[in-house]
Image: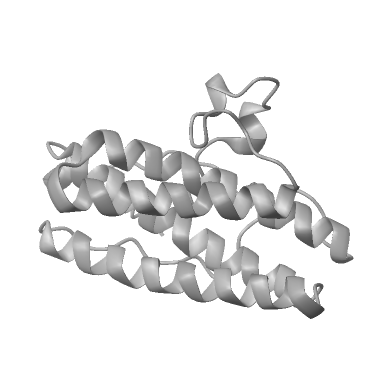
Length: 172
């Protein structure tokens, strides 16, 4: 998925929580796209897992859009398409993409946990946990510090860093 910085608009500049919610929303847009791509390459039990993850990311995306509005912002919109980190031509590459998507989602939710308080922080921690569990299932193993790629032993930060969707800065 394409990585670009999520730059706040002038009215959002003073709100770290809103910036983190927008980044999570942008990442969820990218995850929904990614699962749409990989879903056609996986069947059977793994296909059911992919559909469940897709539905979960759509629900979180919609909740985050509401949260942005509640915080007084304008939700970032999804791009028409996203650059995939590698070609997805078969089931093994689709499974690998699912793990990458979940690692990246975990990263933005870790940022949101740091920026939020109260119920939003609890929701972000739950989303981080869910992403870490899904990533471990897709990968067949877990990482020591989900969402914190810089602390995961042997982790490639480029492969597991937070996704920042193209267009999340409001520029079109």
